[in-house]
Amino acid sequence: MASPASPPAPPARGGGPLVVQPLRRRHCAECRRGPLTLLVMESGAPRCLDCADLGHLVFLPRGDTALTRRSREESALWAVVVRFNRRKGRYERQGVLVEEAGLARAEERCLADAEARRRRRARDARRRAAEDVRFAEAFAAEIRRLFPGCPDERAAAIASHASARGSGRVGRSAAGRALSEGAVVSAVVASVRHVDTPYDALLMSGVARHEARRRIAGGVEAVLRGWRTAGAEVREAAG
Image 1 (tube, rainbow, N blue to C red):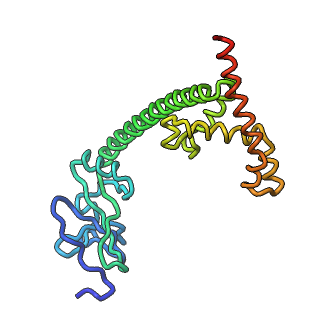
Image 2 (cartoon, rainbow, N blue to C red):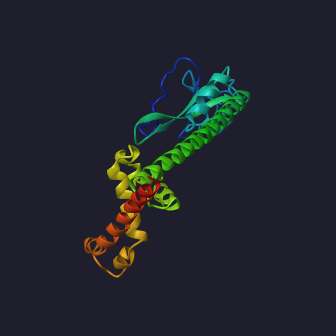
């Protein structure tokens, strides 16, 4: 009878050999070699991989699900490797033994997939970049429609800043993506506040945000009024 410290016999498994990583020093019951790092239990006795006709297989540790699955598919013979976990009281899978040629073919398939994924990511990145350019152009056009006097370069800069992907700014909000007037005006106001007024300097001097906004509110409105009326004057002159 096995001692209490000895793990139970490995679970029976149909469909292929089961290989064990032993916790104790074991020797092959047939060729007497050992201690064994991997063994197969046959009729209650340990056998080394060579005596169990598995010596030509190579060990693939667990961790890469796709490579493991494809290595099994490419191997005519393969085996699961387990080890007993004393703390949990159960055998746990450590990897598989597969044919070396099968592993090589599986690695080639995985590399091909990796290249395909790389190309797909590159295509997706180009598509997103093109979408971002189109959206920034539409955002800038909406700025120029609402503020005809806003210089083109400034409108483009505001649109690019507000609509940067992953920024969390107003241009990436639902309202911003819909080019709602409120979102566009908010982006313009934020730009004017930081670029055309002493707002940042006030914050750096210790003025509270709400007080700083109150102090520069007139300056912001003056810039916005100028950008609105300048466009109206141009239209009147053109008419």
